[in-house]
Image 1 (cartoon, rainbow, N blue to C red):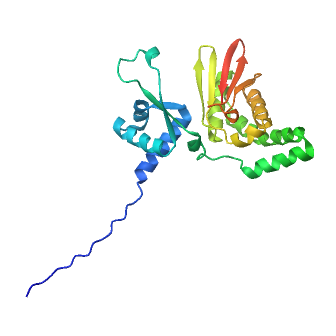
Image 2 (image 1 turned 90 degrees about the horizontal axis):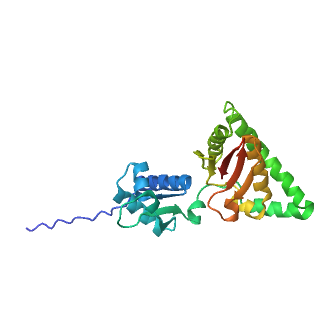
Image 3 (image 1 turned 180 degrees about the horizontal axis):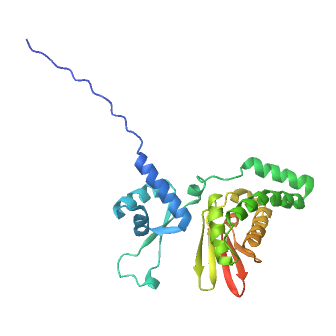
Length: 237
């Protein structure tokens, strides 16, 4: 008697690639912090191979999360060959980072303008950044009076608040970068929020400041110039 053995097929269900998701989240954080990076720079930061990083970037580019552009390395004495390419976050990718305000806040401020005018919005903005100023001032205890040291301490404090901030020394003084603005969408319509924040930066570093660029106006970072004791300190936010 012949015996027929029936083998039932078992469906294979793909599990989410947690490792890939984690790596791409780290890539997003690095690009947010640095603005733009090459494959080699990302590979060094992530301790991964360049082909592996390229695969992640290609997937992110296809999803509309990163933009690719050619970067000029001639000033750095790069060798001849294929031009290096750098990657930066798209607006869609930035949307995935948390924002402190939503459409309800915009609607509320529009109503505030109707009933109290722009001065009422400025009073609201001052009240909103007051708590931020207090928290940053506490975090800056012990930073001393040197503006660059204070800017570095402020960068650390602002990073804790979600601004992706960093500071670096320049020949003319220093530079503080804030590459994420938690209130960018609201500030685009209500610049009083940026004005109030700029004044807070000035009080915290102990010098008059001038905002040169903001994310709310469509710039990649917010840039504030801070002169100090014969040197120039540039605060980028």
